[in-house]
Length: 406
Image (tube, rainbow, N blue to C red):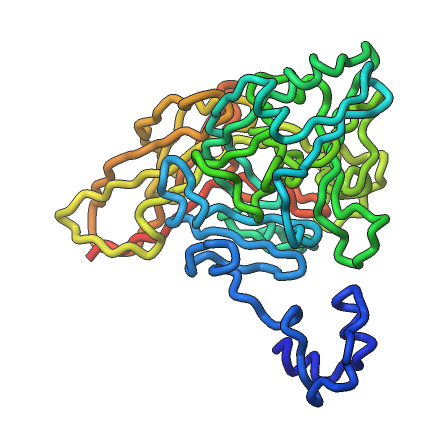
C-alpha cells in the first residue's frame, strides 16, 4: 500500500502514535500532509546497499541478497542481508557507549566504555558465517509465518573485536553459569520502552569459544549502524539471531536465558519430526544451535545461456554451522548422478568454504545445476525440503540454478 495515500486517511492522533510523540503545530500542517519521518526512505541509500538487493519488510527493515550477488569470498556491506526485530537506533554515540556485564552468575559486575574494551583486551579478526535461521522460509508448505526469505539471508564478513571469553574471565564467572543473554539499544516496534524487541543469547560454552567476538569493526571499518554499530556479538555458525546488534548489556545467567524471542516458536524447532501444519507444544520445541550444512551457487546467475561447445564454470560457498564441509558435489540430471567439486579449506573455523567445478553439457537444451554439500560428520543436504516446522527454519535443501545450452 502507498504510504502517502494510507497516511492521508489517518487522524493526526494516529500519526502522532506512529511517531511515538505529539506533533507540535499539527493544526497548522497542510491537509493530508505526511510528516517526513513517515515518508518512504530509500533503503539502498539509507544502508549503502546495492539496488539489486530485495526488501522484504520495512517495519522492521529486513533485506536480502540474491544468490549471484554473494559471489565475493568476503561479503561486502552492500550485499549483506539485514535482519531486524525492532527499530534500528536513531543515533549512536560511540564515545559515550558502555557495556554492562551482570547477571546471577557474574562474580564482579562491571561496566566498560568502548575505549576501555579496545584498550584492555587483545583484538582478533575472524571471517564468520552468519545466516538467518529462517533463510529459505519461502519454500515451506504449508507456508510459515515470517519474512519470506529465499536464499540470500547469509553472509561471511571479516569481523574484528575482542573475545567474549576474555571479558568473562575479567569479570569472573561462577560455576553455575549456563547462558549469556544480550540486551541492546534497538527499540520495540510498539514504541514501548519497557519492551525489548529481541534478547537472545548462547550457552556459556559457545560464549567462551575463541571465535565468539564482541565486534566493533566489519571488513576493516567501523560496523555500519544497520549491522550493529558500535558493538555487536558475532557467534558464527549459529542462527544470526544469536549475534545481537547494538549490545549495551550482557547477562551471565544460571539458567537458559529467558529474554524476548527465546520462547514459544521463536528460533526453535520441534525436537522430533512432525507432520506439515501440525501444532507443536512449547515443551516439545528445541532451541536452534549449530546451523545445518548448506551450499549456494553464486556464479553464474540462474538463467545463464551458454553454447554447447563451451564449458561452464560454476562456483559458490558452502558452510556447516559448527562443523567443516567435507565435500561439495554438483548434478545436472536432477540428482540422479553427482560429480565432485573442488573445495577450499575454510580460512578459519566457522568461515564458509569456496567451491568450483567445470561442467560440460552433452547436448542442447534446458538443465538445472544442483549443488550438494556434506559435512565432516557425513551429513548431506537433502534434495528436497527438510522437516517442516512452524516458523520455517533451517531449510538447507540443495540450491539449484537454471541453465540453457544453445
